[in-house]
Image (cartoon, rainbow, N blue to C red):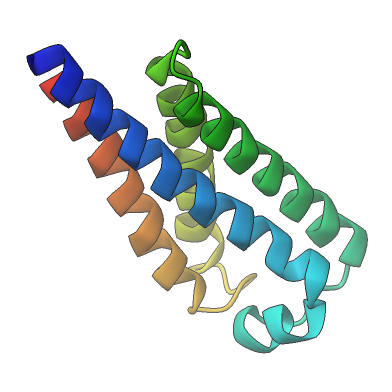
Amino acid sequence: MKVTTARKSATGLALAHGAFNVVGGLWPLVHLRSFEWVFGPKTDDWLQMTTGGLLASAGLAQLAAASDPSGDPAHARRVGLGTALTLLAVDLVYVPKGRIRPTYLLDAAMEAGWVTAWLRAHRRA
């Protein structure tokens, strides 16, 4: 029964984090102007588009892993931890350097939350 509960928890987490990553990745692709209004103008639009596409792809992989009954929840966890830790590191390195706006600290808080959630879910499993 514990395995079933842990699997449901990981599945729900994968769905939530996957959706978060898809939305976050698509935002600059769909409406770069509003994204830059919040997070600051970018000098390389192609890089923002590439990052957005990769983030959306990671989110779709999480959603696919969560929706496959025979899928491996560990896959969604690895993708989730990888994206969250990468984005958290970028936020924490480049905000203090003044390369990106302090609004990225809001993203850092979210990414730290995802890391914590994945680590707790793994511990329960």
